[in-house]
Amino acid sequence: MLEVLVISISKPLLIGIYENKKLIQTYKNEGKTSDVLPQIFDEIIKNNALDKIYYVNTPGSYMAIKVAYVFLKTISITKNIELEACSGFYFNQNSPIKALGKKYFINELDENENIKVDFLDNNTKIHDFELPNVLENIDFSKETLPIYNLPAV
Image (cartoon, rainbow, N blue to C red):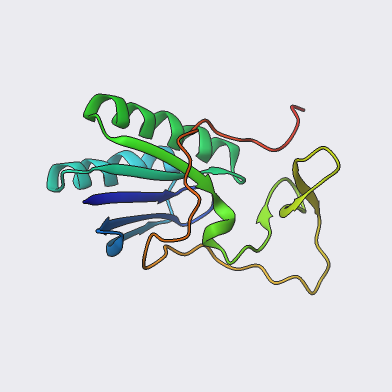
């Protein structure tokens, strides 16, 4: 079973190919999601028969999430490949994720049951995103629409 995981919510864009849940190939690119994702997927689809695609649909760069969703949903429909989504906190050791300005998404719920958005103190450690070596203990969902976490401005 071949699966792909896409982490597009920050730079670099990370894509991992998994065989039987184990990471076998990695793509890392600093370019814009809209430019890089189609190029990488062109290569992946030409060389592999994919069974499932996973992507991070929250929280992070709104534009990257939107672009990834539209692109991956289109691939999912046209190639009949299952698409699932999950939170980015699974891939950065649960550390804060850049939001707007100097604010960060923090994996805590506020009084309205939304992911908390706040400033960080100077002691907060920010971890880079990493592709897991094995796709285990990740709460993937069939609900794949982007979750933006911030109110409209």
